[in-house]
Length: 244
Ligand SMILES: [Zn+2]
Image (tube, rainbow, N blue to C red):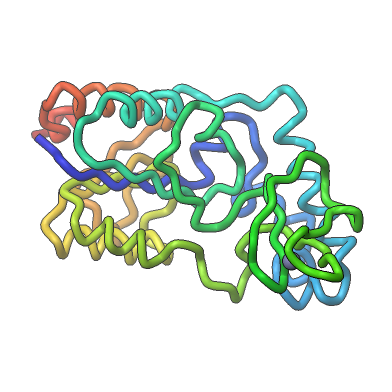
């Protein structure tokens, strides 16, 4: 039924794996000033503080308690079995999609497991937490790597590729991310404009400003596996909602 799919995933899918998120109640921003730990200016003022913040995230991700959940696994299966085009765009900086086996993946807000040379913008996979010993191999003298994370005031990564995929998709699904806040709001507009079916999976009820055609309310780990099943079987997604 569908040939070209774009999937956007957000904090909700990671939260179900036990990762602390930024914006929710008791979220990380409650304990930290955004301007101190997630802006280029904050990093310039105090790189150690920023590195300490992201090292905390890194340690949680590698604590051994955090694993991909059934939604991550279902999306990986979709990638393996779907015969059309697929792109997963994630707002998450963790590597849970990769751990589940996804490869056609774009991290629009960067990756916790990478550092970036501030001069050449080349990225390096990190095997240890951030510290002054993490330097690039592309410059002389070697530069201290900054977190490969998109901060407030910076452009998300891969926007050209994302918009190209949205312009050609016939199915756009947003999972665990508020569909009314930029950039997801722009993505659903774009997909609608190009005639795609647009679906959101969210724990919260549909926002009255939502532009999505179908709203599936519930946990990603419970809603995504049957959704993937229907896509692979070529069945209509509308029927999953029970009112169509
Ligand atoms: Zn360099």
